[in-house]
Image (cartoon, rainbow, N blue to C red; front, side):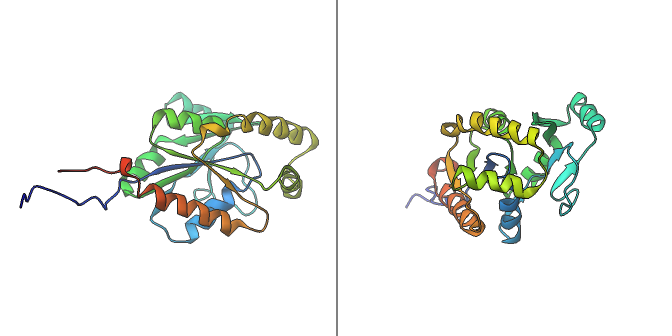
Length: 207
């Protein structure tokens, strides 16, 4: 028997998973639920210039910067990608990616559509998941119930989601995050992760 022959293929490489979708679709809720499941994942913390919401914990949910602090980090090359999202800046600090890669766990991050496109160019093997609501009325109700939008910002977000929907074909998967069915959406994402780990093009074969 040729002892150099190896069938040790059940040790897949870590995945990079990007969760995107329109504002108010529940990206933050999905990531929080994934974190609570105790999976072998590393959730990248996004930096933002918007103010924290009452339930958010700085450093866990987001890294909160002032506009001046964010601009300085951009000038210093501190972000692997950054974008203007509505009226706020968001970005992925390089240190977050370095820390995530060091864990050897699956990396998960939330990004808007333009940020997801940038990361796909930087990491072509990344897996893009687009979250959508069950229907447009459900999405609109979520935004209104959040009570963080005025009439003008609602108008901007509605225009933006029309543009974002034009990019759905650039994503690998679409997951419906229906109202009151958060765990079903999370179950679907977990299934996607499991299936991706069984794909041969994520493995290193040796014969």
